[in-house]
Length: 172
Image (tube, rainbow, N blue to C red; front, side):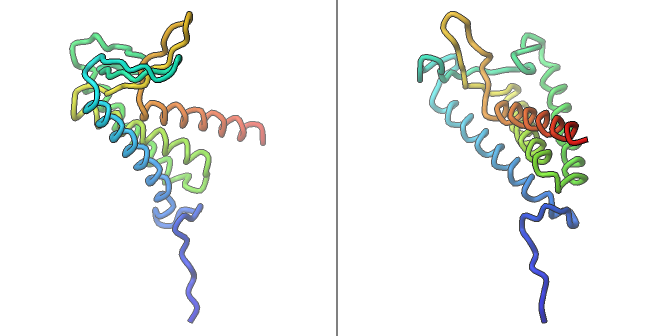
């Protein structure tokens, strides 16, 4: 009796199994993000900086606010606000992944954003702030805000999302 072979990474949603690759990508982002944050926290003291190249340093900083340190100086409400926003965003992303599990580029973007959001929510719940450590700078121009792997995944996911939408619009 012949049986139909089940594909592990099917591009079509079948009872939720089509979400597994995307959840796996998000889990990898979370794992890399958390491991790098733990390594930096065990290796550096707060505000310690190590020059790696002429344009890149490692430094341990904490961000209680949003992107670019926005609202970092507030008394603490932002911890709960951004935790709730992150959890709601993840819920909406899971809904979109279930609905569009076969759209590869779109789901890559969502999985990266979700992994980054969860990585930063874990920090907010565990520490009350997000751990940042990647610092890029250009001599004569200045420094970019310090960020982390989760932020990189969110930015990459946002870029893929924009690219996917532009591709979709151009096809119509």
